[in-house]
Image (cartoon, rainbow, N blue to C red; front, side, top):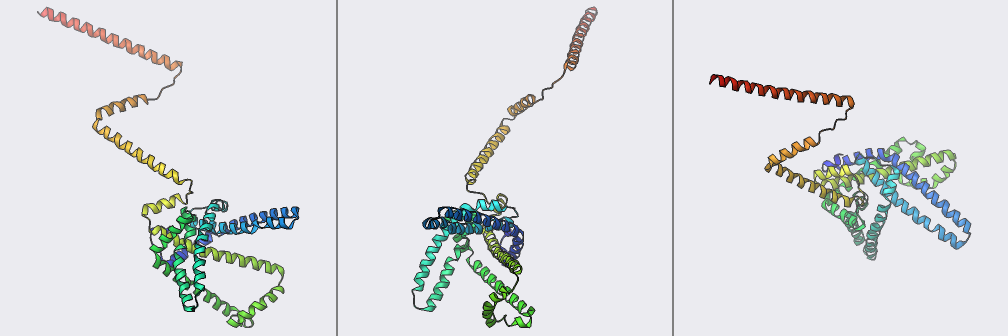
Length: 383
């Protein structure tokens, strides 16, 4: 992934986000169907129990958790979408079920961090609205948005860097404040690109529409279109309305996915820019580790360090005690020689060979003794 190699322009990030959105769209659709099935199951259970109870108070008590669970699942869907997009940026695959399972706890953390930021934001906004001057309100609102901008990557810190609610806020604050002016420039460029796309679509529709519909592509025509559109929809076949609604939902989902992909790519690029090259590659290989794996990392590093020290001590012992080490190595080689399993014929043959070798040695020894006696006799005759 080129985002790990250093700062990348916002235009390249948009291009990568478009590519990643195309790759992750199927997984996000599967995740959406999984969430819809889960919500439908909860709805059936709640309404089934409420029907059996048939009590107004019981109906309220049973139906109350349903909106809360639906809101929680929407948060899970957002966190899981970030998880899926980051996995595509890292060129790693993940399924809809895995993303749903791994993002349940991060969704709770995100809700807690959002409540913390939201309380501060609405408290400052309430105090700002009490002022009488409109100019001070506008300037104060702009400053408030600039003040809360460093917390924009909280969900990414929770989902991708395994941070808690408070540590994720601190992580996002530190990351954005180190690249604050670059973040403002990227937001400005994204706003210009969005405005350009809207104007291009508006101009294209105005050029392609016939003369009877061209009047609606104007500010006054848009106001009239809001009144005439429901009447026009009632005159269309239901099949067309259903298909058109499905297409609009898919287009809206793809647009939201693309926006989230741009923001995720921007986070990864800024986060990798502050890391050493070795750390970038290590993060890409390991992926998004869970909190349960983190304590084992320190133990593994300690064991590797101990093994390295033992290897160094063994090497120094070999250098200063070369003879002893050579004898130990020879003895180890003898101990490691394989044991031969043989049958009776091979054992008999080895016994015969050993007997022949013994006889040959005895004959050689007797011949040597005879030669020595003859040399002594010759020497006596000479004397």
